[in-house]
Amino acid sequence: DSGVTQTPKHLITATGQRVTLRCSPRSGDLSVYWYQQSLDQGLQFLIQYYNGEERAKGNILERFSAQQFPDLHSELNLSSLELGDSALYFCASSVGGQAIYGYTFGSGTRLTVV
Amino acid sequence: GQQVMQIPQYQHVQEGEDFTTYCNSSTTLSNIQWYKQRPGGHPVFLIQLVKSGEVKKQKRLTFQFGEAKKNSSLHITATQTTDVGTYFCAGTSNSGYALNFGKGTSLLVTP
Image (cartoon, rainbow over all chains, first blue to last red):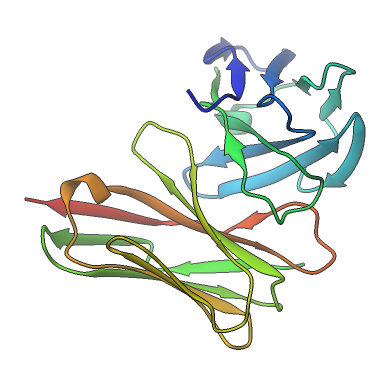
């Protein structure tokens, strides 16, 4: 157990639907990062939150959004889902707001869009 | 934007052989980190390198950061079946907040 909790572990949904992925960071970590992992694209950075505020944005589609709540847990919302959104979505956390701290990853949510 | 490239994409070795993966960045990095992801698992932080020319060792693993801080390598001596997995390098530029990951090198070790 890495200390980063992601739910659900698996999600199967139809095209056009909307889903929410949840992440609880490791105790004491203020930053949450979302990454998408697919076979051909590797780990793609989506978005970072630090202590409730959006800190950095990567290759996140407009159909995707995220937020970090006062208790520091984060949610990634994916809407108007397409087949190509099928991937493993990882959440990671770190104590600081910059990429000079090692990340602790959760076990991921495997999303399958059918 | 900053890109981190890794080679090779795949490597298949016999147990006991050495293994090296290389990481190159299009821009100067402020630091570089290495992660290992076992099959079916999640990436696990191995190490961070910060200084130009830095070399760090963890048992059979040797990590190097290039003098220009644009490349790095991970060398495993005498591989074991427990080394199987995908090794990722990840870096950021001085102004970066989040890590950019390479696509990883998948290592397969056969006994």
